[in-house]
Length: 227
Image (cartoon, rainbow, N blue to C red; front, side):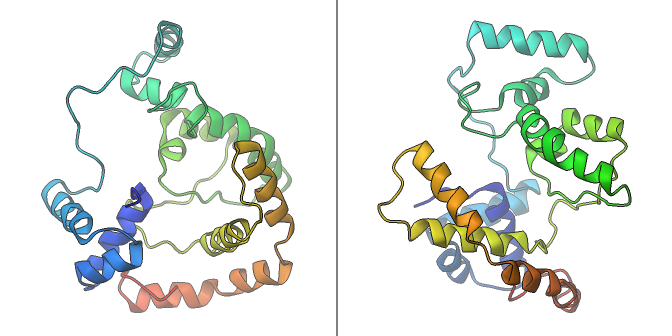
């Protein structure tokens, strides 16, 4: 069974809160019913959907990476050391590039693309969800220094962003690629090709759907909608 991401866990809880049965949610998410039941118990017990701490976690940093964490923590002494480590190196597989950290988000997304675009359109407000790289102090501090306005985003918000439908379209395009990508380089090439194949009419249709999406969420009192 696939492991649910934090976003998928929040969606599953939203479906349960909207009145769907665990079996329905499990079928929609492609996981076992027991997974949804454990998730529901965790949410009602702890108030969140994150994994609970486990003992005996293996060490994931090298001495060199420890020095990097120490150097960053020295510069920002009031930031918890664990958060400094996550923001600098990421959590699992630190330093191997198999996850987006706050530092990578700033260096590869904000600085080269987002900040220059908002400089050209100063009236824009940046919308992003509550993924760890987005909410890290390293990221929010950088955006504050840049004078970029952020849209408020509650922890259990309904996902109104039409980009999710676009990602799904691209994923289906990649899944249809033959032969299937088997390496990171082939997957990157397949993604670039799929992105280039996106029809602008599809993008415009998703944008025009926003008023209806908002009305549907309001009518559902913040619960699950058909979007």
